[in-house]
Length: 147
Image (tube, rainbow, N blue to C red; front, top):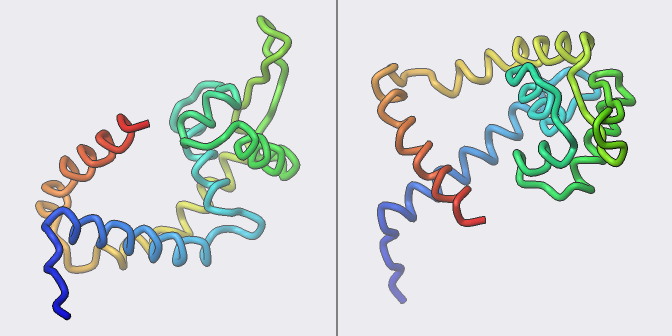
């Protein structure tokens, strides 16, 4: 039995999946105590957006169910890393913002992740990284549009 050669797209997609798995494993090991990668991603999003978000907006951003996002937000609130308040305009909704403690732990996470990121890019020059970004962004956009 012969094995078919993967197409260029299949080979790239396989590499992306493997990189994702390896990156998640390595990053999870260096995150601050009590932090999961999902926690970091939400904290980072809130820190970069500088705006409150509803749990529904966050669920949509991360392509999760509202229940899964509520579970993550409950943990983040319990840890003191986010503030959750009622929406003053619609009592059925809540609004989420990152707390000062959340900003501190997010910054600490970035510091602990820096060596892992540097090691992942060891020996790859900036031009290659710059050239890869448009391709990765286009793949992300295509996958986002399929929902």
